[in-house]
Image (cartoon, rainbow over all chains, first blue to last red; front, side):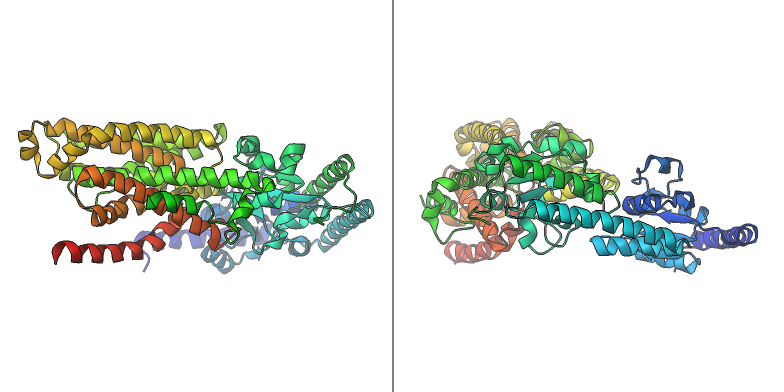
Amino acid sequence: MSPPFLSRGRRFVIPLCAWLGLFACLSRADEIRIISLSPSLTELICDMGLTGLLAGRSSACDYPPSVVSVPVVGDFGRPNWERIIQLRPTVVVATDLERPAMMRRLREEGIATLLLPCEGWEPLLAAARAIAEAAGQSQAGEEWVSRMQSRRESLQQRVSSFYAGRARPRVYAEVWGRPLTTPARDTFLSDVITLAGGDNVAASLSGKYVHISAEWVVRQDPDVILLAYMLESGAAAANLKARVGWASMRAMRDGSICQSIPPDHLLRPGPRLMDGAEALAEWLMQWSQTFDRGSDDPRN
Amino acid sequence: MLSALVVAASVFLGEGWRNPPALFAPEQAGVLAMRLWRVGAGVLVGAALGAAGVVLQSVLRNPLAEPYVLGLSSGAALGTALCIIGGGALAGALALPIGGFAGALASLAIVYALASAGRRTMPHTLILAGVVWSSLCGSLLMFLVSQSSAEGLHAILWWFLGDLQVFDPRLVLGGAVFVLVSLGLLVPRLRHMNALMLGDEVAGHVGLNPESERRWLLAIAALMAGAAVAVSGLIAFVGLTVPHAARALVGPDHRRLVPAAALLGAAFLTCVDGFGRIVLYPIEVPVGVFTAIIGAPFFLILLRRGQKRVWS
């Protein structure tokens, strides 16, 4: 049983919402208002040219800059139910089902909810289509998908022709230093590395982001270390040189540490991943030209 | 002697443990260095927690005392969490341990001040003050955790589980200095601990000032536990059970008990950590997860055997 004050609140909120809803229906019946609870989906919505439909965002949604004026409905993963209701959305989109009960309530209020985990290219494209359809602009979704696909295919072609007869660089990616966290097979970042022409050393491990033994990293002896820390200053603090035993690694001796790519371009499963993949591909191709070992590397 | 052997053997525990000599191949130099530092950290932390456990159990005259009682752990946790959330983790690799160390010592100072309102500090008052202070720190910690980002949360959780992977040798060396100084201060007091165990009156009769003696011993234990926490995060179970296991092995005389507990703690922790390196390799499992899983059955066996010998 809910305490009396809650049910009083509900008695107040529900009629209010009903009136507001009725008012909204009467005034602008066809208006679509989207609330995005995840930064990657916010980027996706804006990239499809639907920024005008955004009625709310999470506090972590900071890109593109034009979304700053959109009201905030709470932190990423911690949305505020009341704020969402106040903004009268017609659609709420989220990547994670962090609050199943809340999403159910939203549906009970007649608000469409789209749960779009974007861990991979296909889910990302599907998410674009789903959002565009919910916004009544399927065309925009299809255009975005084909734009993305053509960028991806051209990158794939460039990379595969570049590495014909060449060894692909073996990449160890680190997204967090304590504990060492690396993207295993089932992560988007692992896909991005592969697309960019790299060979993710952790792709042999199943799972998503895994805590990895430092000894394992040293034993793998990767060609390139890719630092993709969520916090930009985190990578600087990783201070790889000071780590015991790491100096013996090939990548450390050669100084093959890639940390110039903004982490949002590598970690946010949104449209800017393509930027990240292209930048990483560029970096790796330059690296390969500098440290060309041909295809006779015994480890490949 | 046995401990030294166990510690040496645990160097080889880890990937490639079936073929120990391969570790000395030149291309494995990096791995060997990591392994040695890690075992070194294990020795340091294990010895510090074992010895601090004995000191606290005898000073507080409570078999359930451990280095983390008296709010040491929660104080250290709070200090570390403040560091992580305040962005201290980014300021440098040493910011976190220093935060934890400061938190541990500050906690002890506060608990001691709270408990010694009168002229004498009773052990049970100390424990009570420690428990209450722990709860307070725990609540503050929960508040911080609830407000922190996902990454911050992760870092805090990992730190709670304890981890011996050494990234920065300076940290272990710094910790070693603190632990060695504390052990040096402790050795001349081992006889006093025997007297203290018999009660304040007896201790007074042999010419000790129980109050100041207790204060010294607590400070030493806090220093060791604080250094251990700074090096490895919170490693549970070692400080509580190693002293009992050592007592079952060598008896209650502190002149033998404290060194035995330190050695046993070192051997136990390095061994468990070596096991942890193998189990899910290459996935890393924090050592704190395994201390109780492996240690508890071992300890129970020792306890039963010890009981038979002493009481029957």
